[in-house]
Amino acid sequence: MNNPACPCQSGLDYTQCCGPLHAGKIAPSAESLMRSRYSAYVLKKIDYVVATTLPSQQKHLDIQAMQDWADQTQWLGLEVLHHNPKAGKNRATVEFKARFVAERGEQVHHELSLFIKQKDCWFFVDPNV
Ligand code: ZN
Image 1 (tube, rainbow, N blue to C red):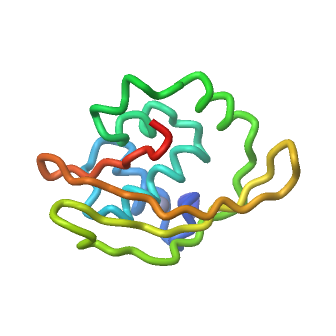
Image 2: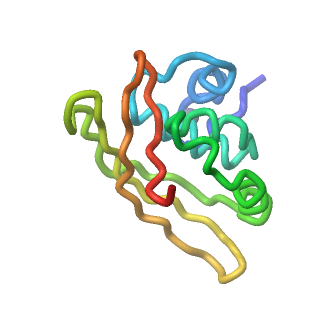
C-alpha cells in the first residue's frame, strides 16, 4: 500500500518528509522547516505552526485566527523558489509561492520568509508580529 504523498509536494511520502518533523524531529534546514509549516497548515496542525515560530514571538500570535484561516483555506500547492541557507549568521531565507482557495477565490501567496537558528533549531520569523 502506498503512503500518502506529502502535502508540501516534495514528491516524497509524508512519512519520509514532513511527518517526522511534525512528530518532533528537528528540521535540518530552513527550507525543510518552511515545507513542514506549509504541510502543518494543510493538515491543520496549528500547534506545530506556533511551535516553529520564533519563541519570543509565540505569545503574540493570534492562534484562533490562524486556526480559523486554516479551516477556511483550501491549499492547492507549494513552490519553493529559492532557499538561501546563509543569509547571515544563523539566518536563512526561503522564497516561496503557496496557492490556495479562500473566500475571494484562488490566490497566490508569494513570500520571502526569514528564518533564525537558535540552539540548532530553525524558527520562522513572523513579519506581522
Ligand atoms: Zn513535506
